[in-house]
Image (tube, rainbow, N blue to C red; front, side, top):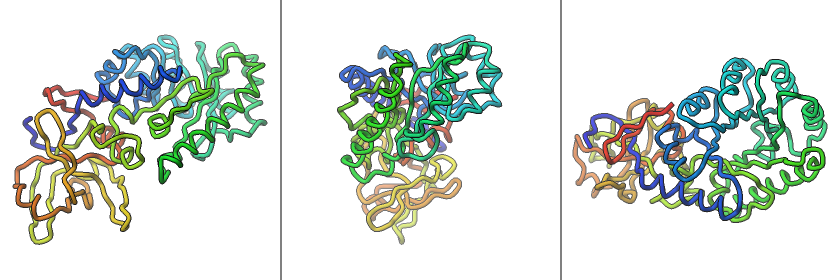
Length: 362
């Protein structure tokens, strides 16, 4: 690989193994896998997903839905509270594909009911503890208001309840992740039981990668929407969602300076490439990424006692040891496993595979 500037390297074989594993889990538990494409954002990776027999996806914006609709996807859920200013784009999409939107307030429901030109499906967004968006799972008054109106709508077809247990990303253990997972399922199933007589085909949709990777019980769930699992990252590794060998992306960074006196290496690759998300160790030190070497068609295991200490716009400062310093020279290219793959992919806009193929993103 001829790397001259920060480049996002993608391991296709790891991606395929990650997709296979989640696909097998969905089949085992008889749930639909509707993967979230906001992590990889690539039509080529989308085609890899499609090769596993998956035909419905999740995205995070109308523009992302347009991109993947143009790539041939016909069943798309936009898992973000609908932005009414994009009604024209939504109407154009709904003419071409089976489009599902997310509703979390009655004003949006009324607007869509008045302005939609085609039928669409909708989920009611439920908050089971993350407290980012959605109706609280026990807010019967607001949920009833939308469902009563839905009975008389000719354009809005109620599909079911959708949640994202993002609080799993702040869990301290696998046990805590599972506790959050089962609590969310319990709350969602209580909603299903409450409204099943009026809406016989209610679906329950859940979506976070930590619980979908770790859990082995999805009782009452109809579909899962993990996204990060295709690439994984250090955040998921620390949560226990994956092994370090499952991480399928690494930012290749040229070494531009070495400071032996303080065991630090400066690379071309900073916050504009990696974002500034970090992990914190038991001593309170920030870690913006682990360091790996590029082997033939693979990433090495992380270099011991070596990590990205800090990031500025284009600079990455790597804290290491005298042994790694002695093996590194200016002009070398080393890899950084990202803390949060979604943010890194969004910043970089494309990938380079070990085969030399460039994959662009939306």
